[in-house]
Image (tube, rainbow, N blue to C red; front, side):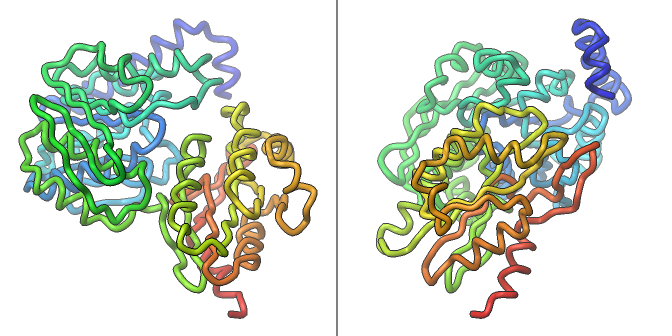
Length: 415
């Protein structure tokens, strides 16, 4: 139905339609964002983690806070899983959430803002007090038409927010976001292995001992601390908050620790996948005999087909065994998606039955990975993270949980 509407209704009418909905939602719920400090977090990767870390900092400082991400909704002490299969909810639902935050006495709301949401004007009629850009790499290219249009969509959040801008200075696209005017601009960067650099009116260097793994999480923590510092929260509080978090659901989440590790992560872009594998490679440097076994797929529905062979190439570059499987095929034939990922897999993998597999059934693929694993090996399952559904043909959603399936399949092993 949606595709037919897009085909026959002129784009300018669709644009007006998308613009009218957030206005009606804001009117219905009495423009709730005017009574809140709304922090919008955008970027290709790391948004959910930054939302979580920022929320923790604000709460540690004593502020009642609400947050909304692809992982969960949270208003004060009450939280519930995001089961929408949509990172940024529709306009009415979003405005209703803001009104609920106001009614609950929240002072701050931290929202994950997507390029698709911006394209459909879901960010409109929300008074953003701060805008954060985590990083920018190619994603949603088909949906936007080009990387430049994707970048400009992200930029519209910064156009809408005139107060505080938080920008990753190490990102190649930092200059684009720095051009937008704001009362306060804070840049963050990483120096060496554990030092976050935050530049506001003065330069602050912070040595961090995060429990969250990976250099990418140093950037996420630096972004969240930059938000905290912009609101006058003491550096010690910011540091304590980010260092206290042990894990984020579905983000480098260790599901099984012994006799081998099993990790579930949401990584679904080439840049994110590479960073996950690099983190695992660094963590096993003390044990060179251990192997990395990966399970991955790619989203269907015409979403970013260009990245499929690139995902295969990266997996075969970093991992000792590669298992391709189903992810969210939507109306695309799952086997076709796997064939396109396979085009990037190194020749030595798909010529060896011992190191390369194509298993359409995701549960079976996870079970195979666990059976291949030996003591001190690592199994990394990417693409879905903590998502509660698998989206298949005709708009159907099948209940799904990678982490539960890992535990179930692990219990069947004869260890």
